[in-house]
Length: 101
Image 1: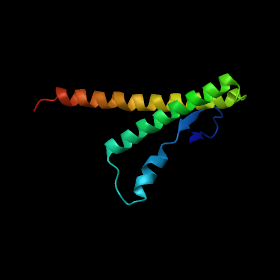
Image 2: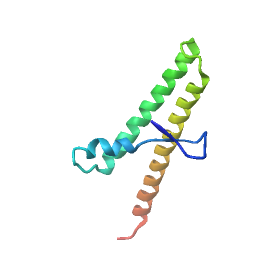
Image 3: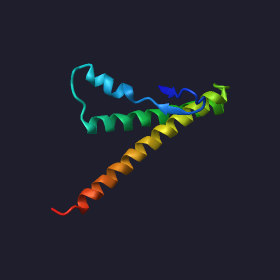
């Protein structure tokens, strides 16, 4: 689900490449809202997964703190990406509203 950049042992980037592949296999073109909706849903899933792993760590089902930290970092990076996309969309909308017709 994540990629680790070559040369960077700790930097984690969420892998959203599977979003486009799933629907393009059906030879359909994805619209931007569909891609955005799937990104938000996948980010939500990562957040739930991180919370579940943290809960399992607290009750002692998982003893590896590394697994907990990786899940939390994945969810955090994915959330930051979605928030930045949202911010850029808002900026673009505001710029369009300032344009004179």
